[in-house]
Amino acid sequence: MPFCTINNIDINYEIKGEGKPIVMIHGFTPDLRLMEGCMEPIFTKRNGYKRIYFNLPGMGKTKGGVNVNTTDDMLNIVLEFIDTIIPGQSFLLAGESYGGYLARGIIANRPERIEGAAFICPMIIPEFEKRSLPSHEIIVEDKNFIEQLNEYEVEEFRSNNVVLDEKTWERYKNEIVSGCSIADQEFLSKIKNHYGFSYEIDKFKLNAPSLFLLGRQDSVVGFKDALNILENYPRATFVVLDKAGHNLQIEQENLFNSLINEWLDRVLNIEGPIIIKD
Image 1 (cartoon, helix red, strand yellow):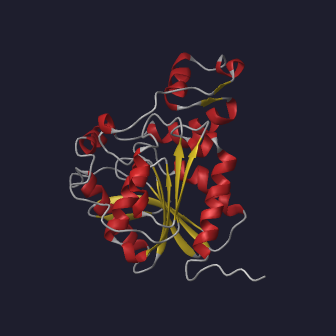
Image 2: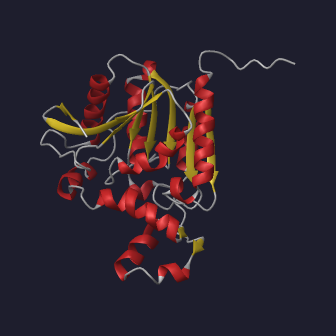
């Protein structure tokens, strides 16, 4: 995978396909494998999209930097990366968790270029103690499979998943744990100390087709806080999925795929209303 140097940081990225750009932003601590794992299956049956995956500073193969100390700094790196990779082009956004928070920052700074946005378990409120959260609840558990894992794996798996079976474990391990295990925790700790933006980001209404995918059992960012910004997204579908925690893209794979496809279908009609003839 190539690198793009932004403010003395080599941003590791990967581009798949050609066509309308979609900027994919993973969450805090994992790497681009999180977004590739859930989004690439969508495009086995859809052509005409340039999928742009990249690793945020301190995550994956992108190293941190002395000039990145806050989420404001993180957003500036992302904005410069976008302006470098697809200068002047309009694009779609898809962000997961912290990536969804950064996506709102992008909307605040580049509203005229965004043709659609998808938010997967988005972080709405940076301060954990201020979030409206359900208690952690396990909905499905394959005890025979769980017995095959070691003590550390069981603890890791049970910590923030609500569906505990072999299929979920394999994807969770390969798409999420794999990235978390190589993150620069020392660098990320300073970002955590300045986790929220220093300015108001929800200052524009995004009239482009949007999608909010929220987990009913998401005990990390919750689902209720997202409803407070509903009015900023007049073309948004808000969905709260049962049997879904903070990794709903894995735990509710079929619904996730259907809803992302429906969002992309709506984006195709962005230039005008849908006209149905008798």
